[in-house]
View (tube, rainbow, N blue to C red):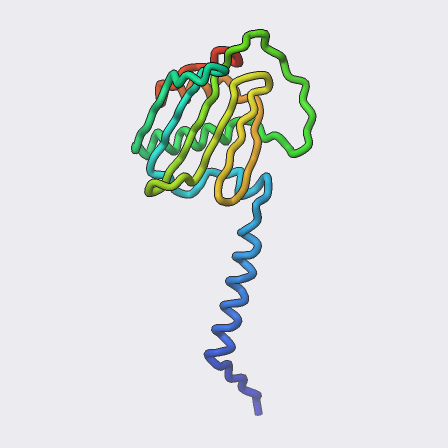
Length: 162
């Protein structure tokens, strides 16, 4: 006679709950790569501000709700090479005391879901933060700047334009 196993609904619920908790705990890390290194799943607004430093003079502002432009800028940020934590760089030093500071914000329903900042100077690091963590990128290719300029009208950097 074969043994029949009857599984109760409470056992199924507790198994599903444990599985969900394990999945969420694995996804909730704030590492410097992986999930933090990908664009957020959804942004409905893009805001860009460029400030000439050290005078802190805003030279450009831009905002759009156009999904195609938002996605292009998000994806282009991913073309900037990843900068591993603790890496040491030998960057060119510019003699000009002026430089552009870029502030790029992606919003969903009015809340920032991704924030990217850079002082277009020396190695031109980009610091990108999301709710999933932070990542640094270094030395964007010329194609990044060209696309940002073409898509949004953002001015090219006064110093570090390849």
